[in-house]
Figure (cartoon, helix red, strand yellow):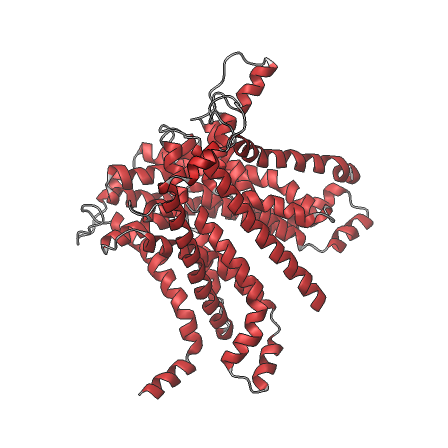
Length: 262
Length: 291
């Protein structure tokens, strides 16, 4: 029973599952090269929709907004997360559990709460409010990752550095930071993807002035499909995959590195 | 003076390190949620508050149609969580305990859909479910049907895409808890003559229970408030909690009723999650007693 399960059923099952997971994405990518657009039959390969995409001013502006928000919220949440994790470690408390709620509370409740708070204090919606929201989302990802990595740090190293006369700032920079560095990179990339992909918080907190790529795709799907969405989606797919690849490679290298040490 | 401040900062460094993140968390998570609660208990226009507290919003919101929408969302979340748990478990099991050589590649393959833009994923399904999409084409080619079927704007489409989107959310925690299991325990169980079934029920499942719970509640809570999938695939007919909330805030413009609805639905979400938690604990206890 066990052998049959191992040899036939499970690989077959996983294979079917992978088709289910990837089929829509593959077809989307295929159709983005279709000359005739989406609902039509296949009429031959062409790059015309990509061409149109790169010449759309609106999409470039949305792309700019997305990138600005992704980079600044990633930097902010990693910085805040790093400070919290390092500080909380010394305080020997379990404060970091509090930040899991950023992932667990339904997005829409957070988004609506922020929207009503911003409008009560008459804070204009725009790129700034987007950064605030995405940083909050990002904290839920960075803090567990950074905390897990910091917990692995041998505390004797820090003590040795301090005993040898290094200041606490010097120790942080030359002992703790190099150890945390891969985790910092991973969480930066992760927050950037999360921010790039977030829709609900952007939908409520962007206002009418700042559009991001997610919002643009949403309005395009809603208002009748134009084939440029296919091209745009394919490009967004590529960006995400690239980030995932970078994260996985980093983590694999990290694991290999740790094995070598121990 | 300056020296004193410097000394103070140095003495309390850790306090100063921890504070900014907490301020962020309080100002932009806790405070907004409290604000929604206050909003639901007051009356006025938009985000305005009127000093007096009333329960009128709740009187207005608690009726059959709203309760039905909340129950529908609970149903959606439960089905998504349970089904994706059942579908995902064998995959996580396979990855954690059987795959040896290409583990890194498999993990990469699974984490792409996990992090692809939700809208892109939903949009990709249009190609398959549309009137002249892949399914209809295939079925007509095979001669099963004569006229294209309508898959969009139905519960079928919503549930299907929900599974597709939330499966990776289930696989990751399951995988990480299954990976931590000491394989010596499983081998010992076989050596002592236990069958695969017994080993699974008494060793593997109880040890992977933390992952099961984490994945279940993650998917359950997140899919309860799902907005994108129902609003794109359900047409304008099928309302869930998320879609109704956005209706209140963007179209109806009655934020106070919307806030009351959020409070009501979050309350029911919390109660149902507690019920599931209780159930899980009972199952875990049962499998321990069986020994």
